[in-house]
Amino acid sequence: MKHFFFTILLMATAVLPTGAANHEVPLIQNVCAYESVSLNGDWHYIVDVQEEGYYDYRMNPTRWGFFQNAKPQRPEDLIEYDFDKSPTMQIPSDWNTQDERLFFYEGTVWFKKSFQAVPMEDHRMLLYFGAVNYDCRVWVNGKEAGHHVGGFTPFNYDISDLIKEGENVVIVKVDNKRHAEDVPTQIFDWWNYGGITRDVRLVKVTPTYLEDYNLQLAKFDAKAKKRQISFSARLNKKESGHKVTVFIPELKLEQQLTTDAEGTVSGTLFVAPKKLQLWSPENPKLYRVDISLDTSIISDSIGFRTIETRDKQILLNGQPIFLKGISIHNEKPNGGGRANSAEDAHTLLGWAKELGCNFVRLAHYPHHEEMVREAEKMGILVWSEIPVYWTIAWKNLKTYENAQNQLRDMIARDHNRANVIIWSIANETPHSQERDTFLGNLAQYARSLDNTRLISMAMEVTGASNYVNRLNDNMNKYVDVVSFNQYIGWYRDVNDAPKMKWEIPYNKPVIVSEFGGGAKYGYHGAKNQRWTEEFQENLYIENTAMLDKIEGLSGTTPWILKDFRSPRRVLPDVQDYYNRKGLVSDKGEKKKAFYILKQWYEKK
Ligand code: GCU
Image (cartoon, helix red, strand yellow):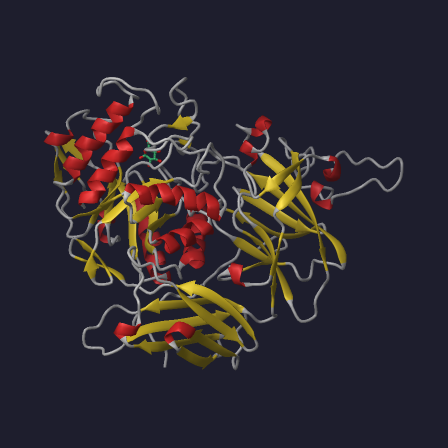
């Protein structure tokens, strides 16, 4: 009998793009657990402003493109590119901080990497990308593996039939040009870092493997003597009769199940409440879990907790919690460039811990996997978001499909992370029927994939007059937590925060998902002097006092932990292409406001 009291719908509905050769397969769960060869390191690259390597002079895709990695065979042969004579850059990274000529560059860059491989009878080989920004085409030995759009979620190709004995070549065309129909759309307040920004791996799997699995603690049931942990898994093939065993050594819990005709299993493990340590910020307990399929076995580290709302409260493990948060961009702790390692994550999250945070909003797109896993180890709860940001092309079906795919893959990668409690589907989107339909569908889709977590989005204050701020958003009925951004003291009503009143007519928990103001580290002066640390400090003093008066406030994620690169911030000697709303400078220096928030959280 299937257990349906709560589900994470294993991504059976993964619809993959058709057309050109496509070796894309649904995202493999917990890729780090598999034997793999890293393709990180030096990759040759060619900057191709006019996409000479892909289109002919009539702008038709050419079969003689750079993906052929052609070499002159005879003296008279004309080949006008040569990867092996082209410069190299470290992957994973963004090209903007790797080659100063590309600091502002938005366009196409080709990447080439050689690797040794041997076709295997009894195994398949997946080519896995942690993320590539933005529009990416991949070839292996001149044959197209696939085309992926979206800069912040992983994807993988089964390249078993494309590899050959000996030297193999993977070529990736990356284009980060912005378009109105994209997700995010044409304008956004962060740097449009281009490139292969996260890990690349060759992953060895058995012909039939565990494509996805889910382990989740059921909500507390006072009547139940035992706590229930639901387990479900799905193979990459609809094959019955495979033995799947889930084993949690520390809890001495084990269950063997047999796949059905859909290639899926699901079951329930029962554990005595006092035996189970629940995951929480104070005790980020993770259990080693071994999952075997026939003779192969993988392991994961999983925490068990419940998250829900009751009226205006957020309950973690049945207890009300105040989310002491901070917003963060996925940028390296010092200077710019995409963050992409556990070290980057640990430093950024270390600053959040110093602030007294138990929560982070990873804005405005899924951050690298190590960020989420490091936060899980450090006891930090996570808000994860897809870049449906500002004015998206709401009526464009392709745009919707793109947003839905990014949502699917965000959930697919992190749905076993205990610290991830909120899926956010949007940020500061203008009200319209088309927008409501688009976001309403996204919210329902997210819930259909995972009804164990909270859904939210960053709304905006809809009306403010006579110091009364109102929130009136049709999307309130789709979300579990009502969140909004407000910039009292910066974009409006400087020094009026103490007078402000709030009308939030929804019986749901409230998160103020952004507030803040800019300051240039080391610039000091009067508290009404813009850009001084004293101005920002005072803004935080006034805003935190104002937030204390908001009924049902269950958390906040001020904007933002660290100054971050943005092409929209051009004020010389102050911004210099940095958004300066960080509490920490781009060099890791703490501003005065950092300590105001820290003190406020100490009282929370
Ligand atoms: C907006 C937006 C952020 C932006 C911030 C700002 O609210 O969500 O992405 O950086 O305001 O203006 O600094």
